[in-house]
Amino acid sequence: MGYNLSDRGRRALDGLYAAIEQRNNAPRGVSHQFSLDPTSEQRLEDLQRENVGFLQRINVPGVRDLTGQVIGLGATNMIASRRSRANLPRQPRYVGQLQDREYLLKNTLFDTWLPWETIDNWSKFPDFATRYSRQVAISVALSRIMVGFHGVTAAADTDAEDNPMGEDVNIGWLQKLRLERADHVMGRETVTANGVTTATGAAKPIYIGPDSNVAQGDYKNIDALAYDLIAGMPSWARASTDHVVIVSQDLVDEKYFPMINRPLSDTIDGGRSTSDQVTSDIVMSTKQIGGRPAAIVPFFPEGTMLITPLGQPNATDSSNLSIYYQEGSRRRYIEDKPELMAALVDYNSVNEGYVIEHTDYAVMAENITFGDRP
Image (cartoon, rainbow, N blue to C red):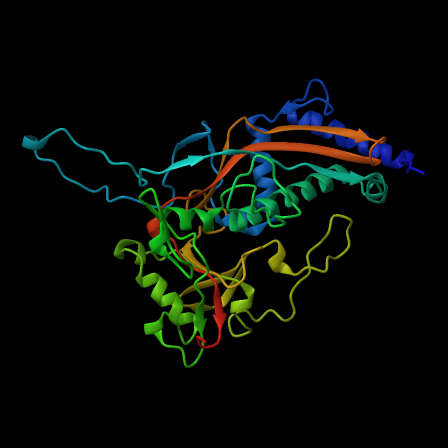
């Protein structure tokens, strides 16, 4: 027998529909597909950043076209100059760093459903519409981060069972580095095809242990590995004071992240979740790795270290990692589905893609394990 939504739940749902219609100027109602205007788009981005701290540390700019040249945010050219009268005119320079690299945005679906039983439980809260919007925003934000660190392809039809971390949703930041700067990736064999070399070959493990030998590509501790990675950057990139060492939880211990008593995060129903802070936030260490601040971020793959500039919280355009989205591409509509699953179904889509603004400023080691090389 199907579940019947209570009168209180129906009133809460009607209130949610009215709020979404008003905020998004949906003249035909939420049950018909509507586009988000620029103000609503920015409100959605802000809501995600407010609730998932890592998004405050990366750039999320809107762009006009599906494909185009990487903007080069966060990196700066030398712009000081002088011109004598004999050598006029003056020659202004771009304030970022233009490169012969392109971005390509892919249509991405963020469709969710919510059973009526849950709606009934949440309907007791007077701010039901706000709570619902917040929960959808968190789900979208965490999915974007997951794809950013695990995505390797952009399949026409994705398969969540075979690719539970979004490996086939889009090409994420780590895969971008493997494809675009093989010389900045350690821990994987290189592959050359059609004159292009990428770091997409088999795993080439990096061993960390007290008896490891650097000459064999191994290190006595993760600090030594971090120093070696930074040394592989061009001198101008190496000198940046904005670098952060992002590491997976399995590579660090309480020396770096004293987080035994971790705060639990609030859930939409007012309870407490069983996940810790690192599930939805960036956690900065009180200690450094390789002379740079260390951080754990949501869904970062095990056995991996990425060193690159991250922006200060909510400092727009200051990070080396970006998610570009196409302005005006967000589409949404909502349906009651009593005949399907007695649920609220919320369809969301946007054209977006992952970008490393300047690959000179990004280095990575993967397939890191503790112990001496066999």
